[in-house]
Length: 307
Image (cartoon, rainbow, N blue to C red; front, side, top):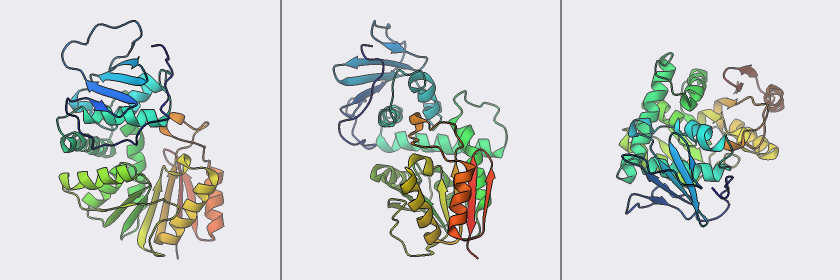
């Protein structure tokens, strides 16, 4: 490749529902296609990994992949990190998201079919991971890393309704709704929320979705029994994070559950902009003036209760 470190800093927003008339995902920054049969011969300026061929053609990054349909799940995040972003061939969370979207979309013929495949595979593997040790654990292990976080969050809940702030793909919200909870899943990204709202019926799950900044949620005080803030605060600067914690306490009728990764350095690949420590969690708890508990379990936890 002429420029081995590529960044995405332009072009249109990511559209998870864009039409693929010839089976190729294009968004102006990347072109992603699924390979079938024998992979083409490696060219001089190509980066080749076990699953990806990457080349620049003008200003567009071309990514060809041979990820099988059975492996289209959220461990794709780890695969991209291990083969392309960790080694430094590519860089930046936006570029990561564009390629991720392209690989999922080119894994099946239609929009709903491709995303339903991704969600079904992921939820099945989360269920396997939370049920016990995985016998066929992926070497890229993203799901295995956050499955115990989801399990712990579920254990921390009190009876009643749930509001998840910064839900991202909404896997945790879907699990809770499928288990019979009344759930609202919210995220700042309209595209992410639209995707979750479209896929949930395909999975036979009922939940409410809402586009909202977690620091300014359009709901009354005490609108949910439980408010979840799971692996969100590391994506926000300190001031924004403080406002999210304050908002979560306002919205919770009974309990706030906050979880963060405990990192020595913020991981740019996952869009982390800062580290959060146990001391930070304790400080947030003390500021509320409410009963709280801080602990560690696959990361840091803060649980705040309203009397």
